[in-house]
Image 1 (cartoon, rainbow, N blue to C red):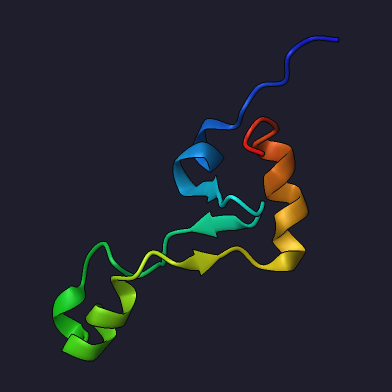
Image 2: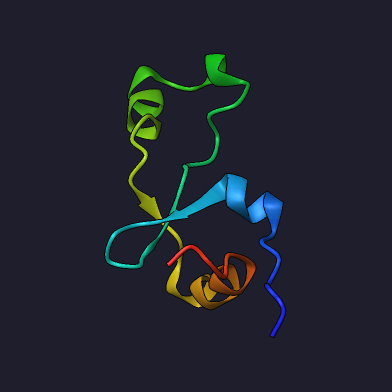
Length: 67
């Protein structure tokens, strides 16, 4: 059986936790930050966002060796 290729775009966006959940970064932190309040920007700083359960199976196919 040949090795499976990891999707490089998914590799940059997602990672796995120790329990197997798919971790992702939050959106809306790249540009146009002057329009947002300080509270919004502070809440976007945390990295603890998880992928939705409906998308998780698809992401795990793209990252076969993550977990």
